[in-house]
Image 1 (tube, one colour):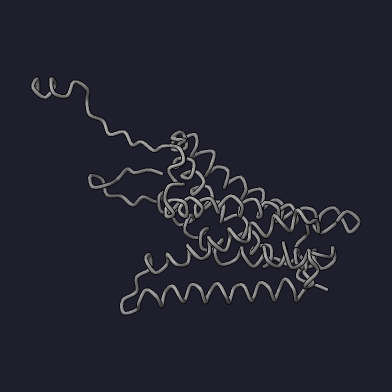
Image 2 (image 1 turned 90 degrees about the vertical axis):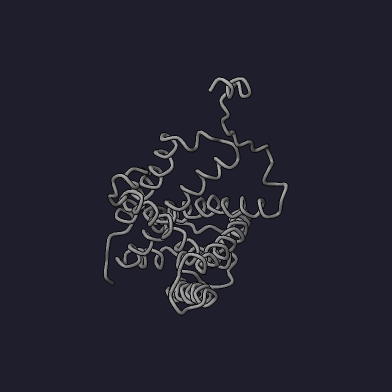
Length: 133
Length: 131
């Protein structure tokens, strides 16, 4: 996060913009999409209350092959981590770990979100081949 | 500045002091820390989902959907935190989003409506494509 360019040199803080955009969107995505996944795939499916797509191999790979589902899962899994990274870093600051403000901590937390994004892309592209069926 | 030096021998630097457990002293502080903490259980659950996707590459014989009581208990705990995140984050929309002529409660209501619709669509897909 850079704070350059205030007053004296009023250029647009694009890095700021990108990180805050990802933070906000990650928060929205986590708020709107995560609870229903946890409820259906984490509770109702395992308890056998409703049939769920990930309970059987054939139904699970069929949806995972769909390119729209892949794109959706990338957004669902990766973007919230940019929100989580920021919140957890400041949670550490609030709980008395000032080192969480440092540049290395920023690299670890936001870099971690970037790594998870890359891993998610890799998993989605290598697990089940793209199919339109 | 000598007079000032004699009265204040050390430069006065503001040092914020937060004692350990400060967040346990007031309900508001506690709820704030819980709100920030919701990120951790949700992150763990999404990592589990990524693992669940990856396991599909093991083939039909190597794929077992999770059914353990521990996993269900974990999901119940995550759901509680996720719902708290949704409630706090979507409520904030009334403060963040300003549209001329639209009252903030209406904006918040639209966020909760979007949450409801998205949840219904996702549930329909997750259940509808199952067997």
